[in-house]
Length: 120
Image 1 (spheres, one colour):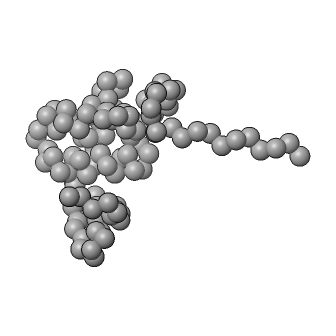
Image 2 (tube, one colour):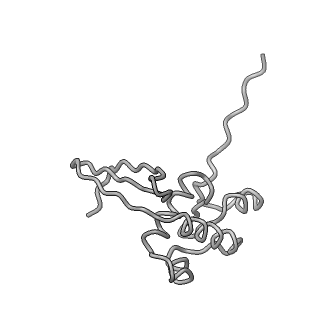
């Protein structure tokens, strides 16, 4: 069973690879890495799909030449950094979501705006 609370951090290692470090509640940790090439290909693929944002499995199938773990790590990084938006199981480039207006029902990718400040 997957632990409920994990600490996930991203960094760039000395070889210029994207690195995800996961610390588990029991004190154990693991690190995964993805190349810059993989990160760029994943970002380009999701952006090219536009309105029909791909599901993760569709991305893996289309980018079969990339290791699935690296592709998933890249996608998670792009989502965490606000470059991609997840709606249900589909992934969209954040700019495309902003242009569409982000009015999807049930989407938690666009938090409600702050209430207006009271007049002085």
